[in-house]
Image (cartoon, one colour):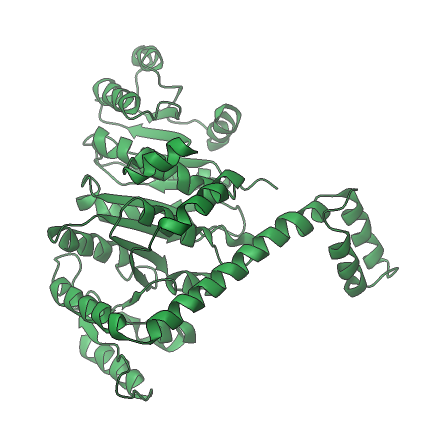
Length: 316
Length: 131
């Protein structure tokens, strides 16, 4: 454990990677590690990047990293892809689009699957952020597909959130989950050299106008990029800096920290409950017998669930 | 309930541009419940080993059709040792002549799967041999 802490604090990638695996696997050693790290670790600046599949998030991430690296500083990336609900497996392909930066010794890229098969927020993203912060990364980019509630919760951990869309994405905007539009600090229209850009820009502007902004509120700017060629990335980072500065001065900053910690605590409690109360029941033969009795109408599921929870963690 | 998932890096070293096989294997392993990181074409040994370290994978699957396997694989094995990542299971696939296979095994590659191998065999091999 001490070896791992010293290793990751001195930036050894092998140790950082092992530590993230421990928390991903809900290994108790992972939690022991986090308990030790938390008191002395302040979180890095978190940049969330989300948007529908194919909007160019990973390519844009690659370009943003390149740009930020010119200013110095170490960058961690958590590229999150959904776990298949059917097989439990996941295909993690975000590294392909970040090929330009994978050899940079100051860039650490980790792909993570949501693993949220049992529901709930994947709190190991927060844990991985803590680990990377402890390892001295100045910026952490969290990249996720903006489709489900899980992903919205993940991206909400970030200080600044980029919502990426494309000129063809008009319909997506209409059907975006309400939460994701509200979460945006900056809208990015990527692939902006394609037809339909004016219409997309107008759609976003109109949507933003529906919301009333008071003085002192942050109104999300719209930035046009072509990630493959790097156009607009400089302007995008200017807006990121503006937002960063806005947060520094905003009273919302502390509020946000509290909201995030509240979610994280709920999460951790759920995990503990699941491990201590639910899993032992679910894995017992008694549970399977009881399902039968519910189906035979010998007991109703509502009474049974209460009984099972009280029984959880007990023997047999 | 164990939450450990087998994590696999599927990588294409060298200069050939054919990743159909690698993609089919990646998909098959995903369907078998594994987490598969795919890094794309033309990966140098350095890139592959760095990805294996950062992603903390249990298995590296190397796909190659260019014929440069002897040199590239031996570089990869050396880098894995250098970076203390030699506890990983390394399997190889692609066009690899029989006379080279023995050499690859001696170099530390754990298994070689040539074209026509059912994905199921690869899945079984991984499940039985992963640490």
